[in-house]
Image (cartoon, rainbow, N blue to C red; front, side, top):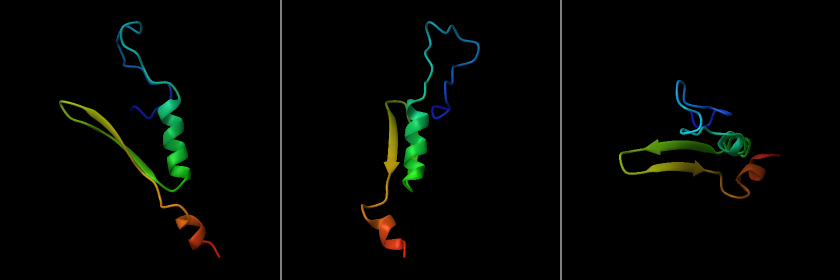
Length: 64
């Protein structure tokens, strides 16, 4: 849900538990527009966001 616009945890004190704004939602939209993918991975020790973007010029070589 971190890619949802303005998502907040339900039933939580909004002053103690933050939410997300537009940042990651906009990043996700831009990555998909560029032909890439984005995903979030969490384990016990860390949180990671993985981006995969096409190589420069890859999209233009496919167009006639």
